[in-house]
Amino acid sequence: MHKNIFLYEKEKNGNWGSVINYVRDHKLVNSKYMMFLDSDDKIKNIFLKTLIKYDSKSNYDFLISKTSVVYFEKMKITIKPRYFIKAKNLIHSSPALIPVSLIIKSDIFYKTSNLEEGVSYQDFPFFLEALKISKNPSFVNKTTGIYWFNRPGNTMSSQWNKKRKLGEQAAFNSLIKKGLCEYQLLKLLLHSYVSNLFNSKCKIYLEASKVQKFLSYSTLITRLLIKKQIKKALKLNVLEFVYDSSKCKFEIYEN
Image 1 (cartoon, rainbow, N blue to C red):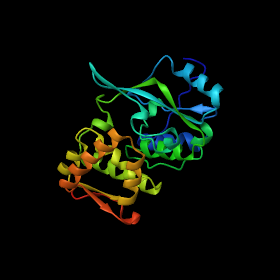
Image 2 (cartoon, one colour):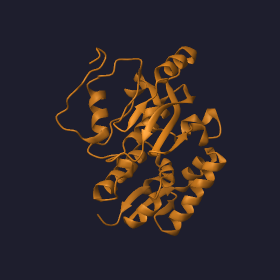
Image 3 (cartoon, rainbow, N blue to C red):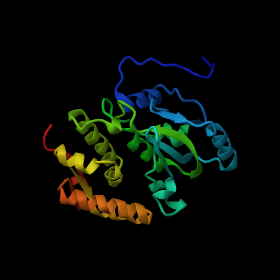
Image 4 (cartoon, rainbow, N blue to C red):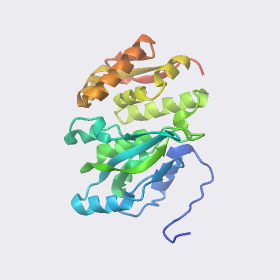
């Protein structure tokens, strides 16, 4: 094993949030930059070269690069952050937050708040908060990571059982705590997400004014896609707009 690789053993694993809290609480990160590499991720050979280039260039504190998402052996797409928002000065509204293609300065990591433990889907709230803290973020026009979406056991492609629903609810509650509940809109773009809400007896309540603001940041294609899914969700009664932020919630009718 390389000298710069360290293994830490934790008595009890409480999903993604548990690991992040453990690393933060024990101050295990002492490098200038950091990233997260899940079991269904792979970094490309150009990753380090790209990081060094951008660090020496402008000392960015949050880099968002393109991601190659593999669905099946012969089916993959490249997610480009610029697909989603209209201008660089609106980067803090970027939804293209796939862990393998994100690099952040370690001091930002230590400023983030604790995550929920024992549930899935805590990466999205974490990176949204980190991006909000960032002072000098930037897009990278290179594909530096590969994400295997349909890996067996991948939480994003798991069945909508009780555990999945509670995980989705916990993740949404995390967004609420951080004042970012409107980002739940992006999940509507996931394959069968709206149908799964309906079949699983779940419903989302979002603040109307924040939804409108979010859509104003989006590119035309993203806005059209989200509006299409909103229309479907409203028709199936799995989405409702509210006018008081305290009423935002992820409701489960049956467990």
